[in-house]
Image (cartoon, rainbow over all chains, first blue to last red; front, side, top):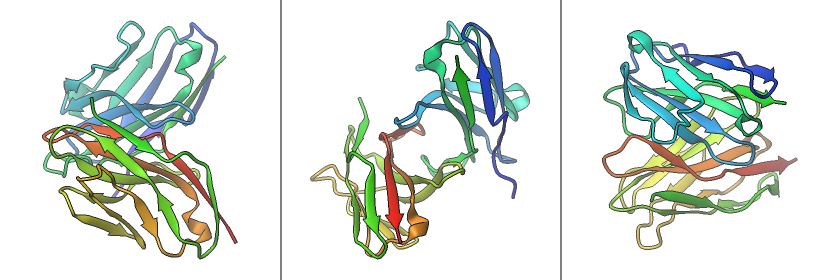
Length: 115
Length: 112
């Protein structure tokens, strides 16, 4: 079974530029999450989708971050304009509809460096 | 709000040593508790879980017991190996919720 795919793995941009990250969850998984992991900290949830609807985006900085999940499969997370403090690893995770709450399957992450 | 606190790292041990990584939590009701592990160059993966008080989760020689009276979920292993070197995250989901709340992580290095 293929795991959660993310791209790009690494991205370096200047502040005020924009960047987009892509995630393809495990086939059939209804729930998709984006987490932000700053160096030395635990992952923090940015947004949770159930199919293509948003369940929780309370910690998403909506003035600069946006995310969508078209057709309830792939998802894209965008940052525009980027700030220095956005340097982090962006993790995508998915879980099945009937899965145990908290059992998430994570991708390898996309590491963003903002200069 | 819900939160998880882990012992400060990094932790360095010799092979075959006994391991304990402390984890305590704050949550209302009856959360589910998890340990996730991140090996070098890999994504986070679930190591073990416990969904109710006094449950013991176990996997790959690691164990953790859900202690509601002390709000703790300490990770233990009797004899660590070099291959256990990784970052370990304690996490919880609040009762009725799917969102994982993570601790800050503990980096473990095992020397041969």
